[in-house]
Image 1 (cartoon, rainbow, N blue to C red):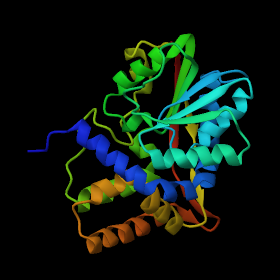
Image 2: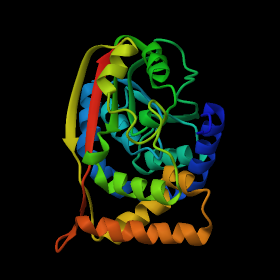
Image 3: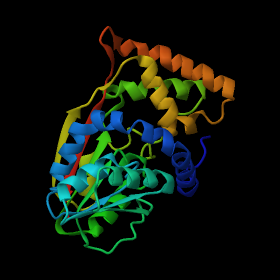
Length: 281
């Protein structure tokens, strides 16, 4: 019998993971911004972020999209970056300062409990965050309540596992080696928000728009992808937690070998497809 999912324990584990992984994730910011750049621009377009926009960034991480939104919003706009991890928000704040932006604030906040004034934002965004929230519809309803009438929400999520083999191959290997059951429908995970359009409509958003963005993860070698995932993908460490350190090393070695499928003479290109979706409050 599988264990009963405990959202409170899950969130605390997630918070601790991101507290620990903040520095590692931040080291890869430039890679993430190149990889996710086209999808980020599409998300900001769907959210109608422009000069003067008041933007709420939910599950902001180390803030690549926060900086992009703040540049669009300009001096007359503002971005509030929120995340469950204070450490990773420190990195987002540093990134904004380094970019010379004075219109970014940060606040530790659960993406399912947005402690903001209702109707106080023009736009809300989330880049690769929504799929890790247990109650996605509830979280989207919170985001909609934070928006003024006519305000826009937009998110980036992973498409189906077979469209994201740079990630799904390691997940499958870990699941087999750690003897984990298949993920239950609806639980948080990297591929749990592929029905983004339905989720937006269920949360009451109108004028829902969707697009898919091909976003291969390009690196010099497969070993670089393995190292990036090992250093900064906290969800994979959570899946490996029951194995000994030696067993975990063996799993990572296997992942490194498997990822060589996507390596060629001109480098590594990990298959990735993203879904960008938005709607009107």
